[in-house]
Length: 305
Image (cartoon, rainbow, N blue to C red):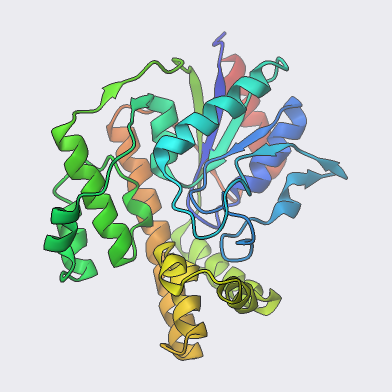
């Protein structure tokens, strides 16, 4: 019987991974560590799809970690995530529970499942200057030449792309090694969702969040004094909603552009996860449409196989 240290649940946006992780955590009496690069920010709720109600099942609140731990405008990174993940992991293990890490940020997941030795990457002014006039498409092509140590799934703004290249260049000059990091025997579960169903859910969820006040959420952040460029840096919802809120884009342009960007993001997430399999990770895929009980039973069987 495998003695697993961690269960990892991954999947693209709108695959239903969080409700599944919550239901599984309730069955196993454990806690969840988020692996989402934007849900760590306070006051960024609708735009990051926190859906905190998902963490309540049958009236019981499932404890979660690494959500709402940083101020909006701050540029959190994977190095910090490794540190915070270990603190959360150790606190759950101290209770003799089996932690579940759940999310769609591939680099965050891979950094803890593989245990990369990551270091804070300083700014490279010369490199930034040489890249500042390039388009996002040109920067993306440059990024593809590297080994994808950075979370390329989230790169949809010029600033994020330049930062991603900056990180890649640094690690090319300072090779990544495995660190003093617990060797985690992880059971990795992937939630696979049909492309058309995923697209349908993404579009429906986007309309719902706009109705719930996603534009107003961004306007409130801007009114608090967070510079528009800092919100645009986060990409996806915050990029398009900020452009709309500052009069640089019409509502229809914002909706169409954002809907397309989220579909592309989900596709990049799946590309990352398939890449993880090529890099040696054994991902057990479950169909998103399976009944919750069937998915939970499948994981329980894998735990004792």
